[in-house]
Length: 509
Ligand SMILES: Nc1ncnc2c1ncn2[C@@H]1O[C@H](COP(=O)(O)OP(=O)(O)O)[C@@H](O)[C@H]1O
Ligand SMILES: [Mg+2]
Image (cartoon, rainbow, N blue to C red; front, top):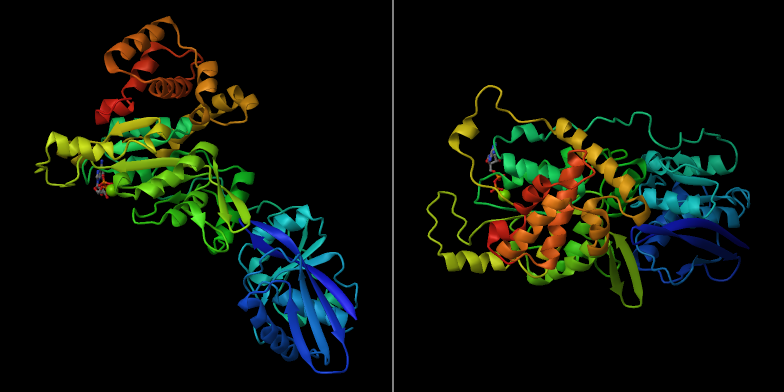
């Protein structure tokens, strides 16, 4: 007797359909074997499936059972095939009607007692089920809501194998879960970190707003304790909320990375890896490729604190993803692509001693050598550089009414500026000024006559490079967008020049 059922395996951040086929021959030696590149976890599945079936009131068929997981070229890892194996055995052995699950796919791990346990990457599996035209997806109870975010696939959430049997025999007819965007989806930004918490630091807040508005990568330079980390952590609060599709993508990535599901995300991710992180931790990798920090930061912010302390090859590995918004991980014969479209915010001290007490004795040479570590792999990709000086005591103590603007107020301007950019860049396949290459920059940023004069003068006085020139134009474009001005004027260019690399570091650019 031969039977089969569809299930899904996580592959990259995506999921692929796997067909579980079972053949049962009566007589001869009793045996249960699984073929199709199973790893240890799949072999262990034999024991779990056997126990779960027996403990749920089913018979474990006698005879020779062979299970095949197809296609063979998908590396099967983890216990995600338990449920599919159990259901295939039940249909093949006639304990439930053979075509009961014909238009369905099942995903779940089993406990020895027959309870369905959640699996990693449920949202990715549901998206794949829709792509494959699966009508009904049967999943563990805890993952039902996550799977039902995907419209067009009926999701049934089941607690254990016994219920599963009742469902497939038609003795239990549960309502499918409500599909799509949860109705309780709050549009409000999450309460918490707010830009109003940061006292003073007008220039740094301005840089943060421009970075958010144009999707520009940002580097903050300043002494320890000046508030760089505090500022960076508040960037997500002034970014536009993710669209529904972005929220799905962010949630899918978090699910594949094994993070617990707390509903569809309403905010953009903020990732702050420590500077000792390995290149594969940063960009992704491993024998079964797992997403790295840059993919977990997709649609959000990657914060690299103490940028000069990161290993050089880790920084090198960031170059291609920063350019392309995704990363290729190649292992043996296989290669997967992970999305990695994030804003980079980096922070650095101005000198190697990092003394907070103002007693720094670093020489100018020490300082320059330290700052030069920044040049090379990444500085090219950073449009905005700003100085974050230690705030004056008076600013920190503050007075009534000295609290700055709230994140909500800044975010409203950011959203308006992004809308202008989206209209202008609609045909270029990008969303914001920070993503314009040299060609697009020259096409979309036409400074008026006084600002052209100012640029010419700066070339002479500041030794602006060609790339530096493009960066200034991109920033000026975003400043104009924040002011709802289609024309880029001299005051926009002048402000942009203050954020160029050389203005803070003394490096050429
Ligand atoms: N401008 C500021 N307004 C309010 N608090 C500040 C400010 N700057 C620094 N602080 C306080 O100092 C602490 C250290 O700041 P932090 O952001 O970690 O500095 P850095 O990252 O530059 O070393 C913060 O947690 C905050 O409590
Ligand atoms: Mg810090």
